[in-house]
Length: 262
Ligand code: SAH
Image (cartoon, rainbow, N blue to C red):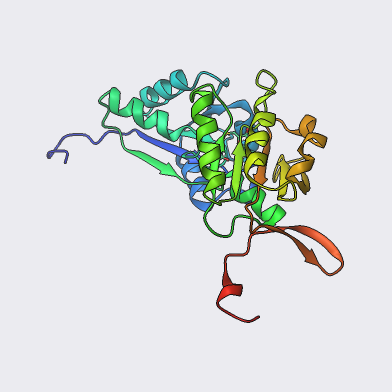
């Protein structure tokens, strides 16, 4: 508690999830935090997504791959001003929240920090596909920059064996183009070729693309999988979903059919 007469720090740091892309997917609280901030910091693609909210503010563009510097800079600025560090999707899912909170702790900073959640790529993509993640599910990132590849393989096997649908983030980059294929081989060691799966590229952004297929057909779409894509792979219970005569997407029944007649 500040003692009487002591000036309260003017600074504040928001770590704001801005959703997958479109204006409509930004939450009211995220909008409020950005409006309340004097300084907005984030990488260029995210800043473009919120350009409508940042006029008149100091905007600091940072590049990918410099997350630690960006976090330190944000914490430094937040000792004097209200700062919003923006992060795509949800900031706590492969986003900036973790590293910023670590830096706050390591620097011994006492600035007020608030994490604002956002719609993450997994649930945004799932909505476009139907309801493939209706019960338990897991997310695994195929980026081995911060996690060793053996650990990623171990987690993939564990999740698929546990019978959960799986969402792959960071599925295939130019420099790590083989990771997606390696992951699919692990999946197909355990699950049948007929398992429904989907690629969702640029969910809720310009150029949005949704492809549903079976896991056995993965090679036909490998070239389309990139770092703007999430991949959803069903479990044994997952099936394609019809809407009239059309196959519209994928669902994983949660189990109501075992309890109710409908
Ligand atoms: N914090 C983000 C994830 C960052 S990791 C979130 O919560 O969504 C970056 C990965 O997220 C990308 O490689 C891609 O796999 C996925 N991703 C993020 N936004 C996406 C979108 N709009 N469409 C498809 N995939 C997306």
